[in-house]
Length: 280
Image 1: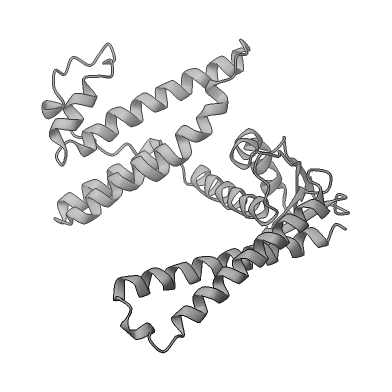
Image 2 (image 1 turned 135 degrees about the horizontal axis):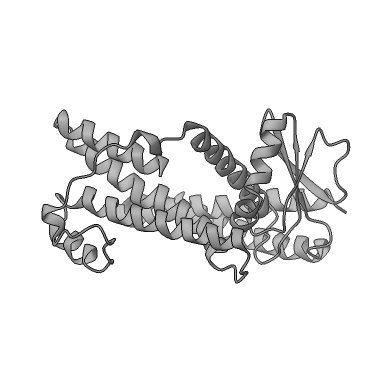
C-alpha cells in the first residue's frame, strides 16, 4: 500500500507537469516490480497456508483486501493509457458494496492517501530484498537448484534482528531455504557454511556441506569448464583468421556474443569449483 501511494503521488505530479514518461514509468514500476514481482510472490506462502488459526485467517483476509485495492487503483491509474483493456479487466473484478460505478471511464481517478505511506516498512522491505539477492547469489555460486539449505544470519543491531525475524517466512520462500536463524553477533560460523556480507550490519551463512556430493560436483563442473574452454578456443581461432573480415557483420556480432557467453560459463565454473574446494 505504501508503494501504491508512491505511485499515485508520482502519477499526479507527472500529470501536473506534463511529464507523461514519469506517469507511465510510475505505473509500470508499480505493477511489475512492486506488485507482481514482490507483493504477490510474498503473499503465496500466506494464501497457501491451510491452517484455520485466527492469525493466519486474518493475514489472508488482509492480503485479499490489499490485492483488491492494488488491482482496482492500479487499473484506474492505467485507464487513460489503455482504456479498453482496463475497462475489460475492471469489469472482471467484483465491486465493493458501496461502489456502484458502472465504468472505469467515469470512476474517480486515484487520489493520494498519505496514511498509506510507511517509510519504515519500505526501508525494511528494501533491506530484505538485499538479503534475498545475496542468498540467491550464494545459491548460484554453488549450483544449488532444488536443495533447500539452512540459513543463518549474524547481525549487529537489535533492529536488524527484529526485521529479519519478522520477514522469516518471506526470506525462506524467496530463497528456497528452511526457516532462517538470526543471531545477534554470532560467535562462530556454523559448520559447513558459506558466508557473504549483506551490509555492515548483517552477514549471511548458508549450509552447503552435506547437500551435495562435492567431489562429484567438482568433476562435473571441471568437464563442463573444459568443454567451454575448447569451444571458446575454437571460436576464437576462427575470429582471428586472416579471412574473418569477409564474414558478414551479423555473424561477427553473433560470434562475439557467443564468445562472451562461453567466457562467462568458464568464469562461473571456475568460481563454483573454487567455492566447493573450500569444503573438501
